[in-house]
Image 1 (tube, helix red, strand yellow):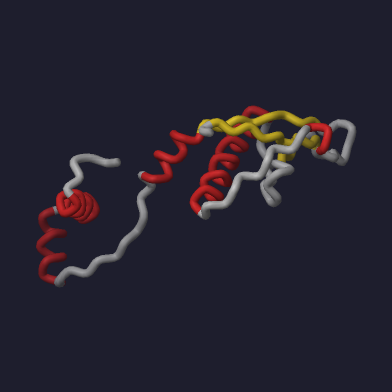
Image 2 (cartoon, rainbow, N blue to C red):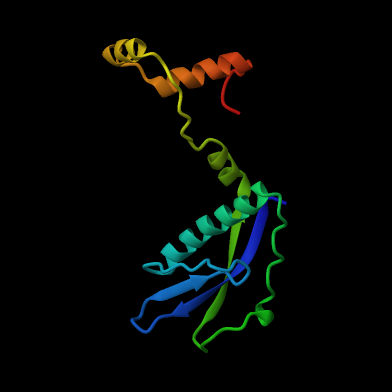
Length: 136
């Protein structure tokens, strides 16, 4: 399954702002500037949490039924956030990571003088060594 839908509790704060959390993912509190910002941030958080579980080969929790969610106040509301994971998987797979490598000092100095992009050179050399044409 590539699309996942989970409930989010939206709470009204005393100062007029809102707070949001996923009951199925403990520790997922969001304090957005408004509901639109909260929905965007909730989608990002949901995608991140699902990919994190996926990477650990852990099962996704079953989404809670609205009737099973206990809200603290009568003004709290439950909304649903959906996330389509493939674009988030692609972004995660193509995220840059740091990998240290060592080269002789004279080579670094010559490369710096020539304005070389070491990261790009290393990526191209690794692609060539692996026989990869373009990014996966």
